[in-house]
Length: 396
Image 1 (cartoon, rainbow, N blue to C red):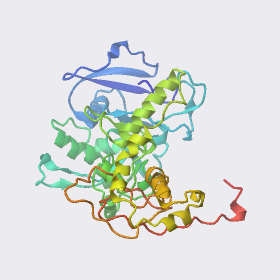
Image 2: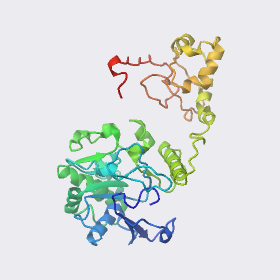
Image 3: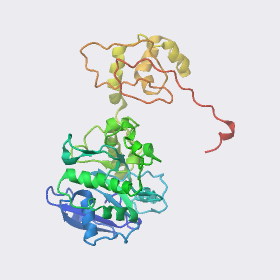
Image 4: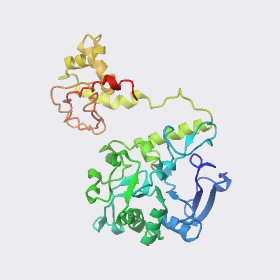
């Protein structure tokens, strides 16, 4: 409400307050809403899709009223739309900023075209068991996650015809089976494709069952372990970040980045954006575990000649001790090429699980990893940078 809804931004907002259970953290009666927003109160039941079904059944909104419908639940923070993102319609309503701001919902609705009638920031192949029992039947098709989702008129009509998606389900597992996964199933069964903002899934035809394993990443794309298999999910891809109770203080990289965005957005809206403030945590504190692990490994088998030859700006480090000190505290964090010429067995009885050590730090074109330090210190040959073609040198 504070950073995503603005009068004149091309949308009409219906904010549903679920009554019963925990009280809202904000007194919504005191919130000044833009003229294109209204509050509704509803019993705390029916879950996401069922609440949308109630809105449609009660005549509060009709499928013919709007070209697109966007649904967001209260478990997320955002939107985190990048300022460089193009949008057909912008607006200048952000307090304290006299610049064109992308209408975040356009990032979704502009992609509802062709055979795509439902889209969300993320698609998951995690699946769900019927009634919550791991031994029961599983529904494992890819699905647009329902914390943020958009459909057009054809997509909404397809969901209405299904009969189960917009129904008020009485428990979490029925809501997941029939509504969250059922919505995507209804669109796929109708011959339509699904869309997302995830670069990893750009251009995927989800009607092809061979894609339903998501490349082996059958898990929540917000999970660190799942995201790591294809690179971390970015804040711009996520657009909204899940922030349920108990997760805000976690070490999730996405949650930490979202917290930074929240601070920057608040400072910008108040005209107090301090660009001199530290953007990242104290680097020494972040590096300590990796430095400690490398100290345990020591300089034995470190290829000093290799390190010097490929880092020509370090020639003034004339002794191996000085060069090792540079690598230990700086070089391993600067993506400089290095290698060890032998394997290493850490001391027995020491728990190395908390020491994230990069196997290939500095290898051009490779990926930072957290690996078992017993198996990883022989670095690969650096991949040479491609030569620049003269005819392309001055082109964007």
